[in-house]
Length: 191
Image (tube, rainbow, N blue to C red):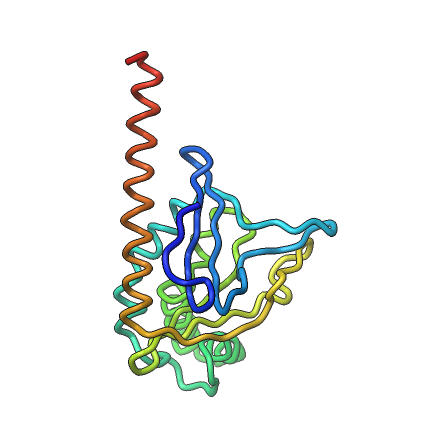
């Protein structure tokens, strides 16, 4: 397993199983946020994480620079802001569409859930708050057939620390995929 950061604060850990799958763990305060229970068996998230890595790479600058929320709603965390913004209604179609477009665009830039590629990935939000990154999640009712071991939470990580860990993880994963691909091609060609 390759680990980036400190499990007691904030860390990402992964192990590439083959070209398309990896066991992936996000640790906050020593808790594995992506771990879940299904049929009384505990699992870590194991899936093709290339889309997740792509999402982190594509959206890291938004997470590091966009502060606040684009809609006038109350909430103390990214999860609360997103949830509370889902109650808006309007008779004006343009106003209604504009509201939900802003909501969706913000969510796609601040939650990696859209990169789950069909796997049981926890829905985690990343939001800049001053010189820290807020990481918040509420996965109590995300899926019908699994239960996350740490379904709800909130942590704040120093922005520079967060950025370094994410960038190092992306770089290492890309290199591992490249090395795996090169060694697979070499093995397949017999030399």
